[in-house]
Image 1 (spheres, rainbow, N blue to C red):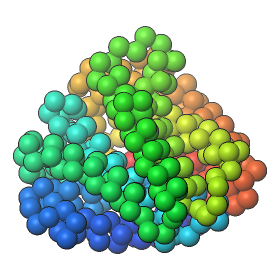
Image 2: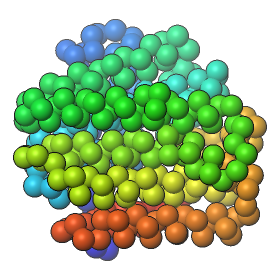
Image 3: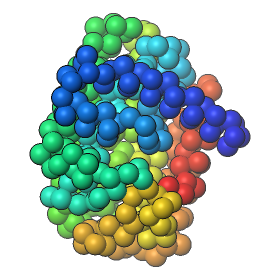
Image 4: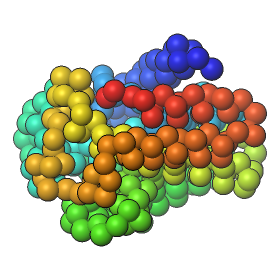
Amino acid sequence: MTETELLARLKEAAADTERALEGALSPVHTGDTVIGEAMRYATLGGGKRIRAFLVLTCAELCGGTREAALPFACAIECVHAYSLIHDDLPCMDNDPLRRGKPSCHVAFGEAEALLAGDALLTYAFEAAASNPFVSPESAAAAVNVLASEAGPRGMVRGQAIDMKSEMKNLDELADMYAGKTAALLRASCLLGLFAAPGKPDPAIREKLEEYAYHIGLAFQIRDDILDVTSDTETLGKAVGSDEKNDKKTVFAFMELEEADARVRSHTETACRAVADIPGSGILAALALWLAERKK
């Protein structure tokens, strides 16, 4: 698959997800309040929608429909948006910009942003549990995976390690990245699997989990690289925030050249993991594109 074809698929998936999110986060569901407004502000109209793309793509690779996958795609994007709101808060990274506009707490206030994040997280489980296009068993499996990957054994654990910034070696750094970034990517792939009909194939699940783990590590290392090599206008958020917040990154343990090499290595491993899944060229193309992204 060419980069042009991939970008077209990404754009299409993002547009479908945006429309679904607009409905899911309408005042009918969130309430006509400032919290609902803040939820929509933080979630709609921006972002690459990589996680939603993985849900939709993995569902289709496993024989599912986009219709069945979209409620799960909305759920993962709500969790992702909540995590970004909380990441940007003064008690966390204290970032004033997100996706080229004021962070949620700057636009609405700290308390409102905190509550909007809480509301997005809890609403994500409602969206996943009430998916009308999958079996009750699949909906339950999706909620379980979403909870485990977003919670204290997954993303929250990674964020907690990141805040303390006490990693002593690369293994500990990779453990943090696995929670902070790879966990939601793994959830995205598995939500796609659960959106497909029938009982999930354990072998396919294992391949998708390995793929997600390695693109997650590559993604985070690339983030570290961009934080020191890019600029605020390109990224749409403040650069140099890791150094400002005295956080350890890959550069605590290696130079730029080795960091680039590790991005390539994780990307190649991810591609190999799914190579024998029919139609998985799109997953390989995504991994390669993420490894070279500029923002």
